[in-house]
Amino acid sequence: MNATRHPAIRSGILLGLIALLGTAVLVFIHDQTRARIALQEQRRVLQQLNEIVPPSAYNNDLHTDRITLTDPPLFQHAGPVTVYRARMDGRPVAVIMRLTAPDGYNGDIRLLVGIDAGGTVLGVRVTEHRETPGLGDLIELEKSRWITHFRGTSLTRPQERGWAVRRDGGVFDQFTGATISPRAVVKAVHTALKYFQAHRRALFEPPADAVVKHD
Amino acid sequence: MTEHKSPSVPLKIGRTLREGCWRQNTGMVVLLGLCPLLAVTTTLVNGLALGLATTLTLVFSNLSVSLLRGLLRPEIRIPAFVLIIASLVTAIELLMHAFFYDLYRVLGIFIPLIVTNCAIIGRAEAFASRNRPMASALDGLATGLGFCLTLLLLGAVREVAGRGTLFSGAQMLVGDWGRQLEVTLVPGYAGFLLALLPPGAFIALALLIAARNAWQGRTETTPTEPHPKRIANPNET
Image 1 (cartoon, rainbow over the protein chains, first blue to last red):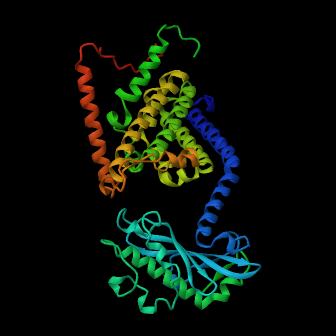
Image 2 (tube, rainbow over the protein chains, first blue to last red):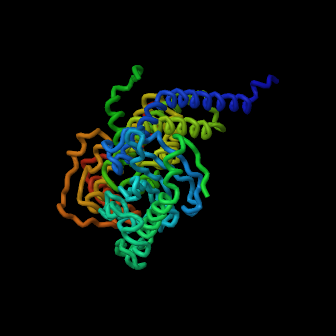
Image 3 (spheres, rainbow over the protein chains, first blue to last red):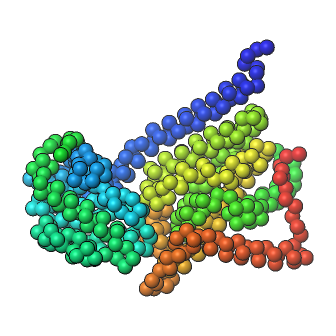
C-alpha cells in the first residue's frame, strides 16, 4: 500500500498545509504592520514622557536616550529600571525612571517618576496596575488628582519621616479603604529620589542604550 | 452564491440572521463565550469593539472552514478548526495593534482569547463544515452580530449604571471626533461600582436574559407568529 494513501498520513499532510498557510498569512500581516506597531508604541511612550517633562524643556531624543539599570537592589529587585534622560543642548535637565513598585495590593504597580536635575519631582504617573477598581485605582490620574501631589516634592520636602502615607505618620493622603496602593507608590517615589541623589552622575553619563549594573 | 435555485433566498438570509442574532443568540440563549462577554463590557464602546472583532473572526473562520470542508477528514477537523481560528485571531490582533492601538490596550488579553470563544468553533463544527461558503459566512455574520448585540446591550447597561455615561471612549474606535459622542446621562453621578465589577456583569446579564425570555415568551404565544423551525442546513440537501 502506498504510504501517502494512508489516511493518517494524508490527514497529517493536510494539517501541515493548513498550518503553513496560516503561518504564511501571519508572516505577511506581521511584516505589513510591524513598522506601524513600533510607531504606535513609540508614540505612546513619548506621550507618557511628555506628560512629565514638557517637550519645550528638552531638545534631545528623549525616548531613545535611555539606559537600563539591571535590577537594582534598592528597588527591591522588582526588575530592571529604564531611565530616560532629558537634556537641553547636552546639559542634563531631568530623568524619567520607569520602575515597578512590587508591593501593590494586587501585585506590581508600574510607574514613571520624573526627577529634574536638582532632585525635585517633576511628576509621577501610573502606567500599569491591577489595584482594586474604585479603591486602589485612585492612584491613576484618570481617577483622581492624588498622583499630582508628588510634583515639587524632594528628599528634603518633606523630610525623611514625611515620606509615608498619613496613617504611617507621613504627609501623603491615603484613600478611604485603600492604604496599600498609595503606600507602595509613596515608597517607590521616595526610593527613586534616593537613588537619583546617590547616582546622579552615573545616570546621565552612560551612552544611550547602555545597560548599567548597579550595586 | 449564484446557483441558488430556491426562490426564497432573501427568506433564507432573513431566517439565518434571525436565528443567529436572536433565536440562537450566543450570549443570551446559547450562553457561549461568556468570559470575554462579562469581562470587557464595562462600557458600550468596549463591548462593541470586542463584538466586532469576534464577528470578523466568525465570518472568516466559517468561510475558511466551509471552503476546506471537502478536504477535512472527521478525525482532524477539530485541530484544523483550531489552527484556522487561531491564525485569524492573531491576524486581527496584529491589525488592531497597528490601527486601533488604544482599543488594543483596553481590550488587551481578550483579543487573543477570542480563540477560546466556543461559539466560533461551535459554528465551524455545526454549520460551516456542512454548508456552502456564502451560507457559512452569512451564518458567521449572523452569529457574530448576535454576540455583538449582547455585548452592546450589556456594555450600555453597565456603563449607564456604573458611570452614568454612554459612548465614553468612542474616540478609540472612530478617531478624535468620537470624544464628542460621549453622553453624560446623569451629571455629577457618583458612580455605582458594582455595575463595573464582575458581579455586576453577572447580574446585568441575568437581567438581560430574563428580559429576553419575557419578550420571547410574549411573542411566541401570539398566534399570528408561526413557529419557524430551527433549520440546521438551510442551504444543502
